[in-house]
Structure formats: C-alpha cells, structure tokens
Length: 79
Image 1 (spheres, helix red, strand yellow):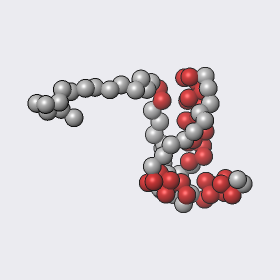
Image 2 (cartoon, one colour):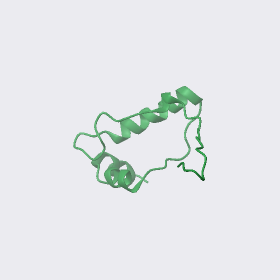
Image 3 (cartoon, helix red, strand yellow):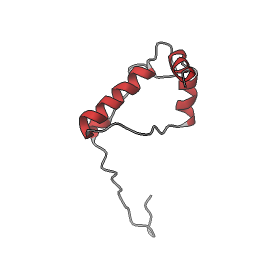
Image 4 (tube, one colour):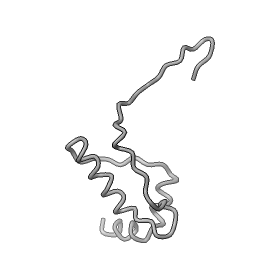
C-alpha cells in the first residue's frame, strides 16, 4: 500500500527461500499426495531450522481439497 499520504513500507518476515514448496500435483486433483507432501514440508523445516512444526495453518480452499482426498480422510479417521 502506498499513496501520497502513506509512505511505502516493505515488511520482511525473514522466511527463508528454501522453505518454498509446491506439490507436484495440486491437492484438488486426482493423484495428489498431500500426506507425502506435508511430510516433505516437515522435513524441509527440520533441515533448515532444526525443529518440527507444531501447527499447520491453511485456508478454507486448501482444507476443502484435503478433506476430499481419500488418503487424508483415512489418516483423519485414526484421530
């Protein structure tokens, strides 16, 4: 956001570029492997920061895709 009344302010959250991950198959498409993809993202975090994530934040759109994935639904059935 920038205007005559508002000076441009760039915010950096310090997120390492190594943390970028894009699944080979989008989670709303057939053949998606969200569990393996999430495990890969966890490993990337461990490799770059030395710790396990404790939370996952997502959007409704992502949750909708996950909740329709058979592998993900099976995993949730164990909880």
